[in-house]
Length: 175
Image 1 (cartoon, rainbow, N blue to C red):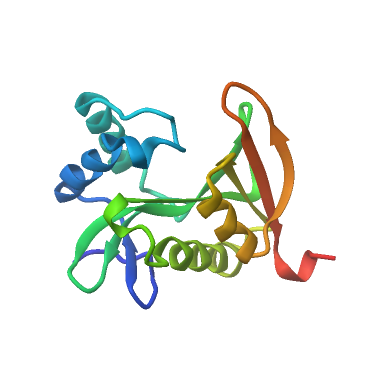
Image 2: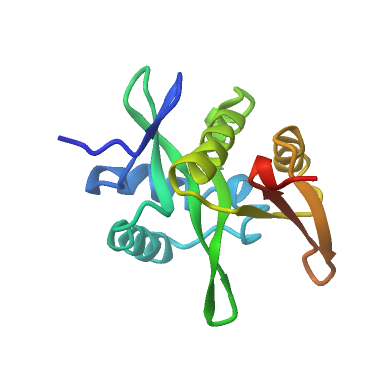
């Protein structure tokens, strides 16, 4: 039986399974999906290597989980809160929020639903103190989701690709 990590009204989140490889690789090869998360589509070989890494890294409650549309059981992406690593160190009591969906599921509020669920999960279930997120500048949809969830823009990283860094403290610790 499949282990469900988290569930919302329309989505369930579980460990990746071998049957997820095809839709996972299709997302990784889609230029529009990759535009704000790497800038270019991955080759099939690189996508499969990333998928194998995703299968191997699902041992803890912090991670990126297969995101499944409950209505039809279809794999539509990966979402979650994973460890916040700075340099060689894991930042204690912090996680990084991420949501990554196949293009045909955009515009339905599913990313917002997933992000909201994982913020609650991170604070209530995992006991995190802070959740951070990094969004490539001009990814207005992802930035709007974070703003609706009350994330604060902490800093902007300028470079060949510009990134906005957001953070949210556990509610009882906010000012």
